[in-house]
Image 1 (cartoon, one colour):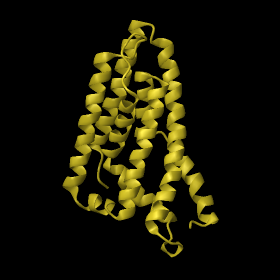
Image 2 (cartoon, helix red, strand yellow):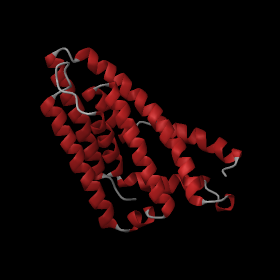
Image 3 (cartoon, one colour):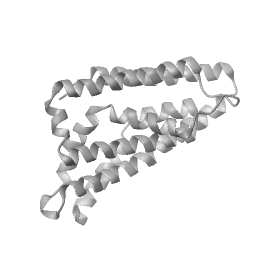
Image 4 (cartoon, one colour):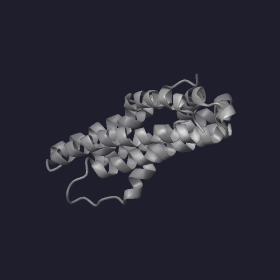
Length: 206
């Protein structure tokens, strides 16, 4: 459905986007520090599923509603700010995960990655600005093309953000046996989440 020439142009562009540091990458890095490599991988999977939801909404045309109704954009944005601050407080209060600490079920990391992505309305606006450049209505279903191209970006996101999270998780597990280092990592992780919340709070709709 998508011709080879289009894919040859899209894949390198998608790879550049995946390797560009952004909110999702920083979130997975913070998640790795906070709870280890496995949680970071699940968080990256949640982020990518959230991206696919945005792609689906954009393909259905709902993204245009978000971009034209200011209050809806702001409601979603501030929900994201509140959730990130909640995660920041949890990281600062609890510190990094220690060897004898109870481990959260795996779905928590996935859920956090999913919610962080879904409550960032700028993602759907980005999808609306980027993917349509590679969509050709003459080649078939526009929605299917959106989903195919979105899946390429999401797959790269899992790979890149997962690697970043694994690196952070390795560093975290190395330092976690030291209570002081564990506390410092909790503050660092909380600082990352707080910075993401501030970034989301001051973003513009344009």
